[in-house]
Length: 242
Ligand code: GLP
Image (cartoon, rainbow, N blue to C red):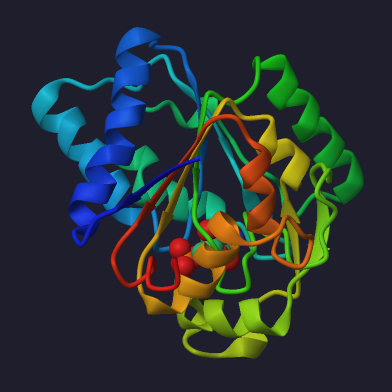
């Protein structure tokens, strides 16, 4: 595990974008793992800049998203599929049809999860996976107590995560869905390179457990210690408990 501590979130974002940039220039049809939430936003800004100013192309790339809320209507602005189209896909030349996401409206949710797992395998696996961290140490939507070997499935959000995410739902915690679909920790762990971004003091405890804690399902991010290629990019505040 490589841990980079830098006071500038712009510089951290440039490191993450650099990893994707180098990969795509080497292998234009690489498979990207995309995350939503506030942590990767500057990475997506930097990728957009490199696309516009430096000719970085996503035209042959493929991508998989990490997770999705269950039950949000197709046009809901916080449906993660819509979020990623706004934050990245619609700003670069990434083909929306090449971006796979979980269907939180599927009639048969377990079948949709199983098909998603198979699609990742069929694509040859994710080459570089961008990850944020929940304040409770969740990765994607793998809440505390998640099996460290879990695959894509339905999960119930903790009250803490619903409170954390209420800011995206007009500060109304009741508007935050209770159920989600998420890649499992085992799924995330099968990506070839993991790039974790965290900033701010509210992430410091999760970063501590990610980097220095014992590996435990109570802090799901701690399982990443077992991955052979992880880059952790944190600002001074998020590194405050290391
Ligand atoms: C959310 C998402 C995660 C995200 C994390 C942190 O609930 N499901 O994929 O990484 O929590 O979010 P943020 O980056 O907004 O702090």
